[in-house]
Length: 348
Image 1 (cartoon, rainbow, N blue to C red):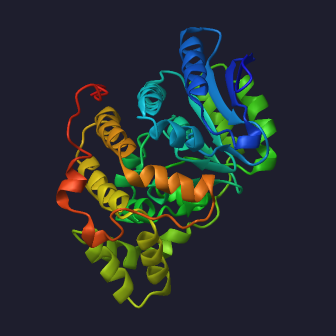
Image 2: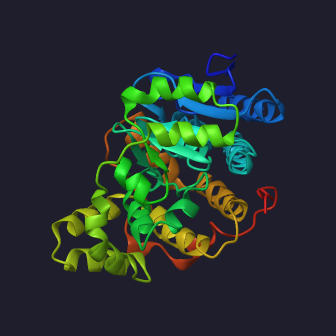
């Protein structure tokens, strides 16, 4: 066991517990390494039949990466953040390929890097307390950890809406959008974990989860599909905003305001990333694309400024550069997708 990640065997289950509850279990590089080591160990251990990921504390599984550390590292060149992204994305791919049931309990806040550790697993559980999001455009980044693949394959244009606005999903919406598989009330999680420890094979794991699952709360986004699909099908971010504002739907106007508050460069790059992710053949190919984007973002003004405004100074008043969507050029977006010597992940 380490302080920030606890790993232990519980019957047939290999347990991984993210253990920074005061920081909403936000991920350090050491935690990424520890989780990878645990997954490798449990995969090779015949006495472990399932891997179970949970978070310590009552507030959430994981709020994402430690963006304070990312902010500080980006200001001095970003080498540490590049190494963090490299190991994090490789872990995301490893989880997706895991040959044993990988059960992620997405109870409470699960965002960014927390989605990467959970939503690529084979059994993804949400509770009534789940708040799922890819909020990167709010800090000048683009949805990563395979999140752009999940968003790109959500029904209709729901993923585009979520990616450009940084909006959150409750449990019903997470199920609708393909980020989760089962709804289990939080009060039943301790019993579920005990039952998983007694499950000797994949079929038993499935039976345990199905027995614990209940009907999920309604998906709020389902009722919004008409305007979302119409507005976000536009070719450009500017046209998307124009359609949202002209739709006459109050929720669409609110969505436009969210998009306009986020980093213009990140919004345009996110739109391009989602459109490019749809035809890509694998998670690995998407992670390769995301790595180029994230490394390019580390060189940008907006990432440091966005984290400053949201987390460091907390004035919630980022000064984006460029400041408006119309000022972000095609070249500004294209540089995020260009191969960079020394900054290639090489998973696909």
